[in-house]
Length: 261
Image (cartoon, rainbow, N blue to C red; front, side):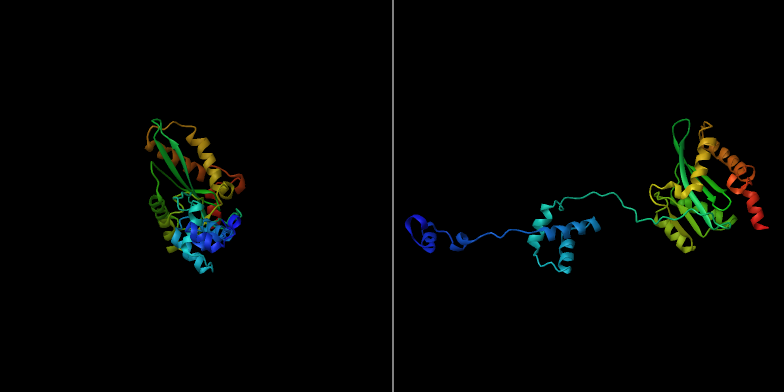
């Protein structure tokens, strides 16, 4: 109408009953890149964060966008859909595997598993002193939760004392809050190895390999009592009769005696 009949914009809008503001409106290009980057960073740092937490955090960081625009971008990124994330471990600092210079300075702890003749699974809890490679305890059971581990450590406290450091992997029994509180109350440091780096716990891994090869793979066990009898025999032989090349072909108990003299 404006081009063919030469009438003004106001008159043309009146004829077709359209608001002039709608006719002359020109949409502005949307640049949501800064908002997208900020939301993505928030979600990476806080996986369980929701919309309103995100909105107010952005507001505190200086973003002036209202909640409607933030929600539009939030839903466009599919952040309103429930997200599932694997539990993440805190970063572990690589620690050199050094032999301590005395007893009860560093203990290494690890779990093993095997099955009985009837396919029932059982577990072994192995504890050694890194100084003389002595096996301090082998606990056997169908279930060995954190409380069972703490009970074993309390038993060792009565007969052996407690170490300054415990070296462990990132198993659920070791990252438990109960073990953390127990160790802090007794001034024991928990030294976690890096995930996927078993060589950082090489002393206990060497013991596990020996137990697997010389005990678990060598016998068929029908009951848990049979496993306990064999592990007690193995522990006595390992500590009192088996010479270790790393110890100058001495047994763990010979090294302990020399240390105490």
